[in-house]
Length: 153
Image (cartoon, rainbow, N blue to C red; front, side, top):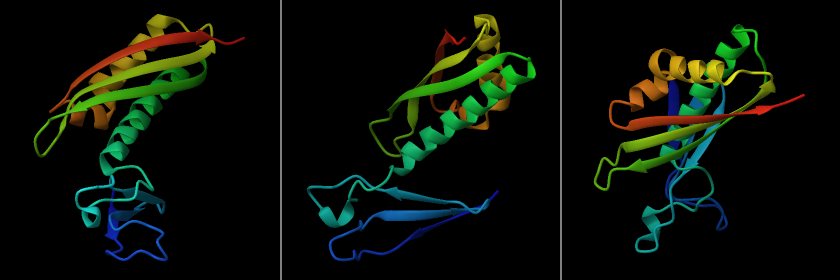
């Protein structure tokens, strides 16, 4: 796996853009834009809020990684899963490097007669065995989960 991240430099075009935006080119050929938060005290050091922050992309990737696992595990168990949403909330350390210290993942799984015990098992398998992101972040953060199952006809 590889990725190249480039900073465009301090210039902006006609007042558009950000002095702190970065473009990631992934090994799979996709592009992701990231930007920093505005800095009122030192505008030249801040972004323009035009794209997600880099740490937000880490959190989003974590949600994608574990949701992928949960859906795949449920489908392999022949459950009629029709939707899966994960809401992630987090806390970070107050001092640099400001790692994640707590992450909570709340899953909402929609399906036809999907048993809660199957969802609970799928989340546990992702958390304990398959999701590289949650396992890696678990080295610095306390990771907790909750879930609900919505029935679809």
